[in-house]
Length: 474
Image (cartoon, rainbow, N blue to C red; front, side, top):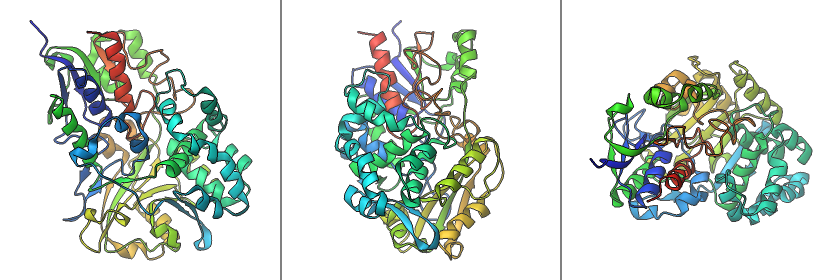
């Protein structure tokens, strides 16, 4: 009897949908199964606080989406997806009402960094000019570099600990703090090798393509991907939790947009015990404590640039951020955490009633933490925006345990699919020439626990699907 489907994908996050689309483009019969009642994984938007307020539950700002080779290969605008650029990609408030500001324009950013301006220009100008050539190599890291000399130029700085690069490259706090805040997206101590990679990537992308939000919320990305899949004949079923492989319809292959741990739980004896032991050794990092706010007005930042930025990094100096991130990674709760803040309503007023705003904020905490960090996050924002608490109409919180309950991929509240330290950056989830494949030729992993790791770019799913197509020709 013929298989009911060529491929079944478990999980409807951006990577699962990307894998499904890549296979459907080759006329494969594809079914996506999602345990939740809506698609999206890390790109869901919900009314978490008050009527009329729309909050991104996980991912909110999408620099990697607009530069992803996979996303660029699709016309998602025809399915209603619109990216909106804020006036400023990023502001980083400092003491006494000052701020380091990341403009779209390299020249404007340089002008605001004083004596570090020329150093910033020297570090980024070549990367920005050649960014379109770099993105395919950075986001498809297991293939041979198409531009090896450019990748080497990027890699010289990328391999350094962020704290080291910040102090070597810059003399003053604003430029150092900018790099520290961006590098902190790695969710690693800034003394760790390769933490500069994410910082350089994000700052390069701010200049080359911006840090946009999806109009109406991140759910629009998932909806557009789903519409593209359905236009190719693919199917999606929500509210369908997969517990065992035997529950699935017949298919040639199964792709897991899940954590390695969930792959083991579902596949069981279909995977060799030795491979399972190697997957169990895959490490997850700190989790997040997240707050979504409904506000009766904009955040009263002391610095005017912070009021125009789509993203605000709240954490103070390089040393403060480094201390905070080290605490979270070493099992401590930061007393002055680095807080990632997104304020989408500065450019997308559709997220809230007229005159009102939504705010999205989280900090890194030890994995599995249930501590309420609300008052600490509020205090950090208030430090740079006196009167912030008075703007809060309602708030919704998620600790690490609740994060994992919301999305089983977020082990211990880890929202980036596993530690991206030097040992796991390219060898995720195990050391392998084909990390998407398992020893069972029917089973594949396509989640952020594979290269190139976390972010809304779909490349883990697209790369996994291409690995399937190479192995299963015809």
